Length: 96
Image 1 (cartoon, rainbow, N blue to C red):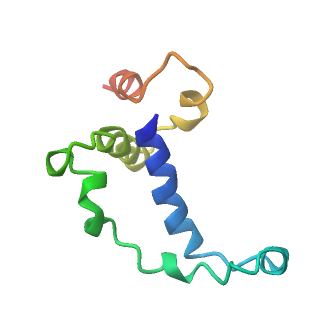
Image 2: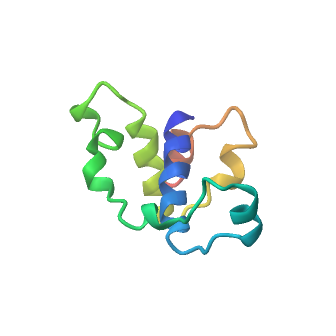
Image 3: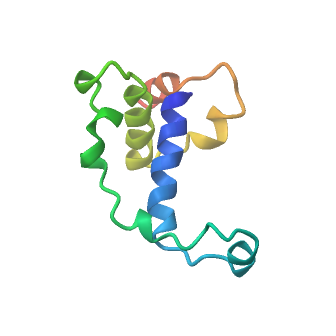
């Protein structure tokens, strides 16, 4: 599950680069300025997130599996978070 959490964070970085801040957020949170810091996010600079041999951080496996499923156009999100018994590996194996 940590791998998919990392993938959600990664996806939000990409999504935020295309958003304009909500006016109510700007008014209610004086610390928030913009989404600009997400524009220069580069996954290659954080190889520990996806290259397991670069670290002892192994959540990269789940992160990469989620990226692969998205790239292949396989709908996994609707099932993965509803069915506590299914894994990313199960979904990948179904598609072989």
